[in-house]
Length: 225
Ligand code: GRF
Image 1 (spheres, rainbow, N blue to C red):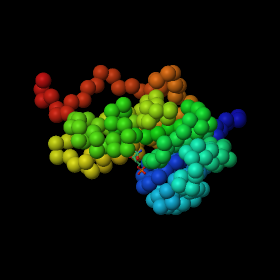
Image 2: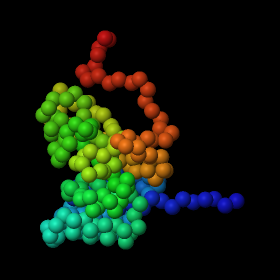
Image 3: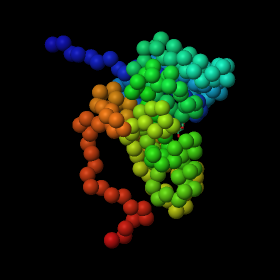
Image 4: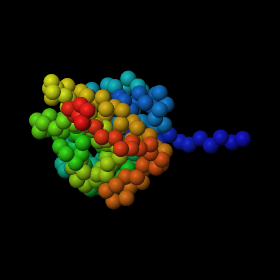
């Protein structure tokens, strides 16, 4: 009997900072809950802690400092060159603090994912957790989405909702959200690896998804109402 082995999904992970999402992807690959391989980790910040995390796990890393490039397009062209060299199947933005140009998006159509620390389309931009906290919402969360030409705008793959508690600070809320980021990002990548995501317009169809049915969350609780 021939057992058909499918190749693990080849990832290129782009970071700028702490790399805790990168770490959760690495951990899930090592646990075999995520059938993927990280071919290259690229940072635009040479001091990113995520680079150390990657090296600890024997991953290839590259530093591409955006300030060394004349234009955003030049920077993106070099990024594309490296990622194509590694023949990557999916670009994973994990705290990558650069806006990518259409040059980059065209090189990897429907093959770029991002994680955002708020329930999109609310609280786009760099301070998702802070803005949600200051707005006074009772729930926030995080979103994994495909990347399109807008900022934090692409088709949504998966979201996680967390409550905002009365005695939360901006930091405690951010921490609760980050824990969920570490759960949903590897899951979204695994769904992609299994070929279960189909994009139609703004919508992402997840094949064979176990959906939650008629569940409503209330915060504060409804207490018998
Ligand atoms: C995360 O909050 C992510 O949602 C946002 O940037 C942060 C990156 O954190 N895009 P880390 O570098 O993965 O720890």
